[in-house]
Image (cartoon, rainbow, N blue to C red):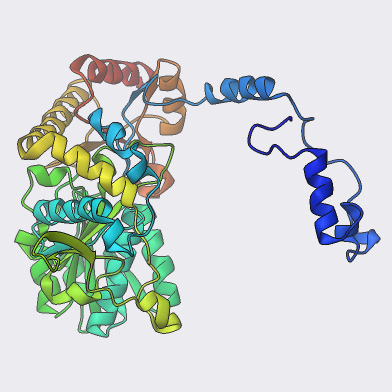
Length: 448
């Protein structure tokens, strides 16, 4: 046998052919005309033995630059945070690792309780009345919030701040196209949403106003004022928020948000070269029955014992087809569990301390860059990230940094042409003073 997982012998093959009544493999393709069949050799390497293949794949994998072997200052939505060791231990248990849809509560109590705990913690962090059992990622969470707002208000225009993650905005735009919803971008001023511009754009056809808190540049938006503007026009106020930041910032639910969404990647979920992650969706009781995806509720059985079930499930994704307001019918249960375990291990004080360290260390980096002669264009309150102006291409600068074992910041010129030669630098609680000083020194040497 040449394959570890496909141990089919010649006898196995002959028995299967005999069972279906054919003489050879070629007979299976008899209906395909000879002239359209491919009879040559594929342009791929020749097969290797298992040991040789594993060696080659390992060599290729070592070419990747990761946060285990390099110091990372790259954020832009995905961050290198502390992950309690217990996270992998819990999610690797077979009862969770192999679990699927918990439609049968009598055999899914562990999975349902885990999801219920995730919902509870997200609701507490965001200050909202309730949260669902998770979404695919932060981008789809925001898009689903937009579609809910349009359906609830019966309006066809959504105002989206330019300070929201560009990829999130792309997802919203894609969703909106299918629903014939107009997306209007609200410009920024000094790194935050331009409130005066917002006032000029909002009208009685606006279904929702969307902002990010902290925003893509790491700046803290005045969401209380923005929320009041949205509500004056009788639109919904949607906030995309980093849940770790809510360990220290006033929760959106306390400042007027109707829907708060985001990604739980910051809690116990590694960067993994781009995913998978775990979106969250929290809202008010008023919108409870319009929430996409699943909700787990707590109840009691016939004997009065506490139990958990899927609840308020409209199941529109199964019965309404093109009339459905959402195409989300599943959730990221395993990664939601990872986030729940991380939040539990950290505790309320731990989450607050972790968030504070992000603020303090980012402030230290900002001061260090300015002391070294760099311009930090956006002042004011910030979390986790700062924008730093350079004298040369950020992409070229990052190539030089990687030679020193440093993963540099995000090149903002890729998505904001007006911010060419500006780097978005992420500083998490894992970064040390020495690492920050080295980054500033290396960038200063190349920036001269």
